[in-house]
Image (cartoon, rainbow, N blue to C red; front, side):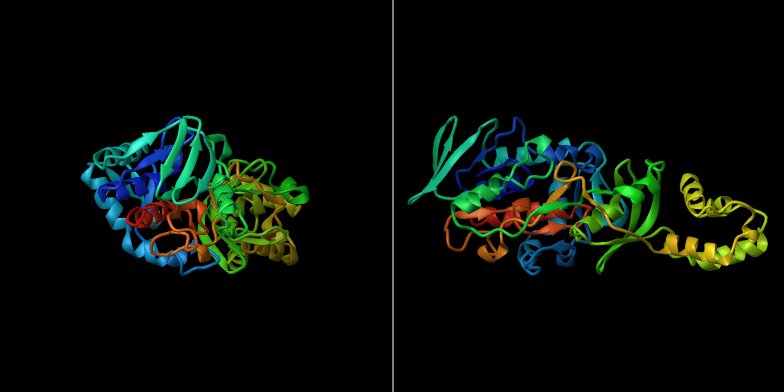
Length: 384
């Protein structure tokens, strides 16, 4: 078993409980590093509203089987059995009250109870297969009847993340889909970046759209572009050259609001009026951008229409994203057409399994990717 992250530890627990001899190998010095940093250190470990429709894949139906057989309630029961206090935030997101390290400790305790052996700081070399798999490591060769690959994708390389799973897939002629950073901030350049350069740190609720995908959550201006939950969500649907659209005043008819204020507060300046519905720095920036000086009542209607359009449908063409360095997950990966949806086994290579982030199944922000790790790991662990 390769990888001591969320999916890998779940595979080990499920297989160990079946009486299988399980050895988990990982090049990192400690297990569950992504778990530790997730959710601001409190681990958004699942989402109560986990539905297949909230996962991206070239084969959208693939995730249904695993998600149906290991549900958020199953993982929550494990959390409660270990007496880990938790709370629900918005949109069904579940977090530890304390530290994400409690989730890692829980998984390690379950591994120990299941007789799982863990070997950390172990670099892996060539992998071959005759009747059995042979894994070369710097600590000696290992033979195994089954090999489960749970080494994730290249997101957050400073934590040791690599595309090793894809190398193994190529070694055994397992097809891959196109990979890209997902749940990642956008970068801007030129006039778009100039327009927001003084707004770094400003946050507000928005509706962000990319194609048919739309998310109403917070947006954060950064020194290089745009971030925050709403933008991270649409980044999973974005491709280079594609436009994103932002409603900076969701649920509000900005044109009607400005018309009403023009009648009742005509002597006030535009930035003052916009400050009623927007953060102050953003209100000032938008007023300056439109060169809107003087009382609201004296401003031309054409200018006010332009302000309303800017707030309700701001269209941007990102130059790119912050890449794998800032991406929470990797989109794409092992082509699901090569795998059994019930067991995660490669159909043409008996005994070889891929789980978690390495597979072409990417969840929304908010605990979905952890639930995919638990569910896909459980599916493989009950079969490997």
